[in-house]
Length: 218
Image (tube, rainbow, N blue to C red; front, top):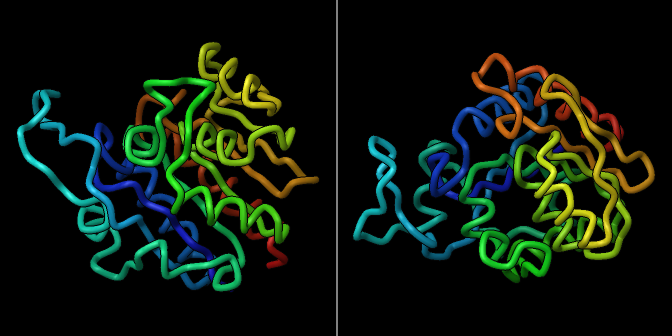
């Protein structure tokens, strides 16, 4: 079984959340599946100094930065189709919202970049499971607009309202759990949208991985 892991860079404030990404990779590896890391070959929207939170005057590439988490074993998302993988999981991090969409600027009217939208739509149309961690359910919601899928980002009312305005159903979920939409084969968990430390988010991500693999037939 092959499971894609879609990364948005490297670092919580401008890329993929490293704890969430690492936990996802760990739990997948423990289940013995083949992992296919991927990212779009595009510039980051911005670069943040993670020591002081300030914006830096430099440019970085999402694929190059994501390769840090993947230890160099990573593909350009354009080289991956839904036919190549059995399931797809997207860890969170501000990079998901910043690099994959216009959610921070446009909220419920957000657009998703073509590379990411294409793969999410392909997976959905082929009935292959999608796992969305932390803030990444907003990308699923925007890419699959009006699909009436069940999603969670925890209990953040503003983000939940945006998800519902995109034509989806948002349900409150604790950090230790994962919400499963059996009909549409979509699993989501709040992770750092609710949790404070790595131990808080680990249980929910582990459950998400197991549910995604179950839906994929493992």
